[in-house]
Each structure stands twice: as structure tokens, then as C-alpha cells.
Length: 220
Ligand code: ATP
Image (cartoon, rainbow, N blue to C red; front, side, top):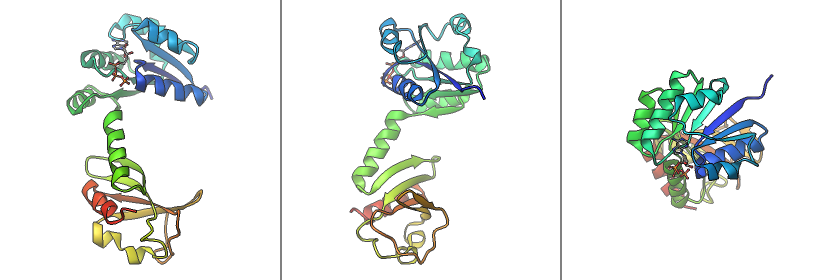
């Protein structure tokens, strides 16, 4: 099977990190930026690095952008350029279009004009850091929708030697323990009578406000 090809537009901190990571994973990456110097910096890293203005449809066509299965638009500050670029790419029929949003309103516009996935890297990282500060046991925080999130929580000192019946998080916090990780082993149908060990990790689904109550109940 042919290797998936990715085009990343905008080599700011976020776009260049995505381009770097995909290259490290062995994928072909086309990096595009209107800033010649940014392109120079990427030219030794990615498969192709090209200086072009992504609001220029002809320039994008000439780069063969239509052959790319996935395009990431990582233009932040120039919201107009981000929206125009997204519109052009959508019209060109890119199968998967992932776009970075600067704020909620920008994100809404991107969604309306057909971005397949809108990402908010700063907001998401801010949320993660805030949850980690609430409880150092929080290893990961993933927003599934406006209403539900998932946290990965290391078993707190207060939980060791107890089981899920003792913890009773469904009744106490309205959250569900979906899985328990022990080392590299992930048990996706945890036995409610099994005693929790130090270093086990709970994967918990719930509403953000309920997850916060649970985190605050287990500060260490
Ligand atoms: P980060 O936070 O990831 O560093 P940012 O949100 O501050 O990025 P910008 O610096 O505004 O985003 O934009 C990222 C990159 O996108 C810049 O290198 C900029 O040159 C490039 N860029 C902006 N407009 C265009 C455009 N129309 N065509 C191509 N590249 C563009």
C-alpha cells in the first residue's frame, strides 16, 4: 500500500511540530509556508518544503495539493488566510482537512465551511495542564465532546487496596471507570471486586464538572 502523504500549511510552532513528528514516523510530508525563511528551516527535515501563499488557489493546484489525502492548515494569527485556505482546499476536494483554530468563533467558521476536524492546541494543552495541577495523578485529559471527557488517572494513595465497588465513582461522581491499565496491560472490562494496585491507571469517562469533583476528591 502506498504511504499516506501529508501536506502541512503554516510552519509556526504547531505546524512545524506536526511536520516533524510525521516525518519521524516515516511519512512523506509537504511543508508549505509563505515565509521563505521558515521553508529554509524545514527543507532539511521534510520530504518537500515549498514557499507559497496558500490563499492562492493556482499556487496550491500547481503544488499538486489535490493528490494529498490529508492536509493540515496550521495558520493561526491570520484568521482570514486560514479561512480562505480552508475554503479553497475544501473546494479542491481534499478528503481529510484538519485546521487549527485560534478561538471558538474561528473554530465555528471552520466547521461551517467544511473542515473535517478543528483543533485548538493551546486551549487543549491549557486544559491538560489545569487538570494535572488539580491532581498530579491526572496523566491525560481528552475532550470527547462539549459534554463528555475522558481522564487517565493514576490510582491515588487513597484508592490502593480498594476496589471499584468501594470507590463507587458512578454514584458519588456520575463517572464511569471504563478500563484499568496495569503496566502495559489494559483491562477494558474491569472486575469491580479486583483490588487496585499502586501505579494502576484508571480510564474514566464523565462530564467535565463531575471529573473535576472526582479529581479534587483524590488530590494525591
Ligand atoms: P504557532 O502558535 O503554531 O507558532 P501561530 O498560531 O502564531 O503559530 P502564525 O505564526 O500566525 O500562527 O502562522 C503560522 C505560519 O503560517 C507562519 O509561519 C506564517 O508564515 C504562515 N502563514 C500565514 N499565512 C499564510 C499563507 N497565506 N500561506 C502560507 N503560509 C502562511
